Length: 328
Image (cartoon, rainbow, N blue to C red; front, side, top):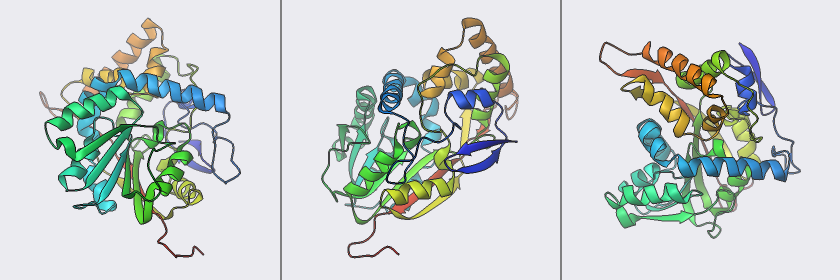
């Protein structure tokens, strides 16, 4: 394997595409450390450029994300809601709600749910989806995770399903989550486990390395798999004023009817990976697609059966100290 610098801790991983990982900032050197001890993006310009890249791509990725990733990313939601003790009348904030999957599940548990996203188009999809299910039980708000428009102590729980890895400064979200949580309230978030555990990432990164250009210049962002490391996640959350952080891997399986579904999901339904693929020449992109399709087809479970890929996530949970508690 190769050594990836994730946050301040070196781990060993068998990632197939070192150049791509650097370009995508999935395993880039950590941002400079701020005065509060948290890793920061290198400059306000890089923060702005990365935020704009993510916002632009998610505004146009709505349908492809819903179709390509929706069934997969919903698999861990029961674990998330259980971790924050979601129950009837609990006040739950779903950050980076996307199509509203976690918000919908929380509302079905009887919680009072507010869901936010920085993409107006994602919120439009969520509104359309939820109208046919939980409807008015979820309040949808267009807002940035780093600047939540809610009073201190407003929520019993904050959840963020696969959103943290798209934020230019995740520490800002952690601080905002701590602020809007009531004392004793919990935050739970998920991120992808690094490859080779996440087999689809292993395949797409390998395809770009073999067939394309892994060094497409992209705006600098935080390491993609940074918070899959439990120690790094705990450090970031503690710096934000949260305590008792624990992380666990949650099994998930991505099932595809055909290999083209996987390629389209990456090309049209992602943020950074879509930008990387868009930076390929037409010939490179065609070669990357052919490589990925071949390797996906090889994972078909049986003739005519689905393609199955292991795609575990890492869920981290922390709590806001109870009123009057003293941290040692």
